[in-house]
Image 1 (cartoon, helix red, strand yellow):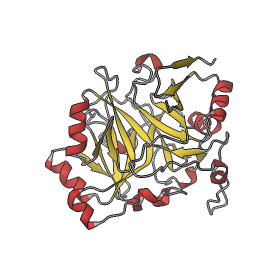
Image 2: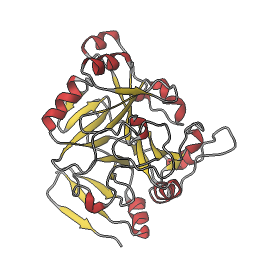
Image 3: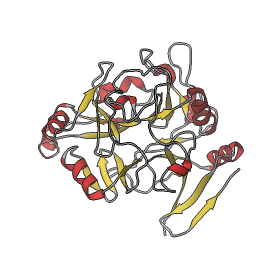
Length: 333
């Protein structure tokens, strides 16, 4: 039986799961193997043109982000929402947004607040602000950014279905909304994201053909970045760069953003760190069990360096073989 190694990891400091697995991958893309191994050493030495450079601690060859897992309370209802309103295509475990899979993780006990807090409508909350619910603007929340050919058909579908949305506070061509379960999404054309990264993979630059749009009103590209909420940017940078080996590209982050954060490269995509109030419970005990929490999957060429770094750091993880019934839990301390 064909198997692949992967590494799911729960972070106590941030209520977000990480799944890592080695390449070559099984066929996650419907059309081609997109998430090829990319040299993070090469990325780390890329000049920014301003005398600085992107940097990384551990050298890890990242491919990219092949899938996202989101919490829903009903997979059938979620499939209807994502296919009827967002016009995405069904997949065995969720939907495809272009070349990225969104997996539905069904849970009747979602610990995260779903409702928006109307009072949390400022661009940058004051120090000590406690979020009682999700911010009005999903760009100040955990979210996933996905490219598409045009915002107009998406706006029309959202408005026809009475789904609220906001536009980028900075004036970019980016639209933000949520699904019925509080999951935040950012959508925009390729031009919105191309200058925010040193590597813009071709599949994100959506190729539009009139004949295709007759049957596919929204042409999706794929994930450009994921946005994660954290409490401490320097500590977060140390973990994601020095331990997990992502590359710091924060010099590309707009200086006008009114809160601390990071732009980190993980192969073909980025992780955007947002130091903002987090309404979600942030301890492992409060999160859904292993494999059942929302997560971002990252492909890597080899898990050896990642496992070594986690072991040295004393981070608990679980390593498994997928596509078979054997589970081998490991506790590293």
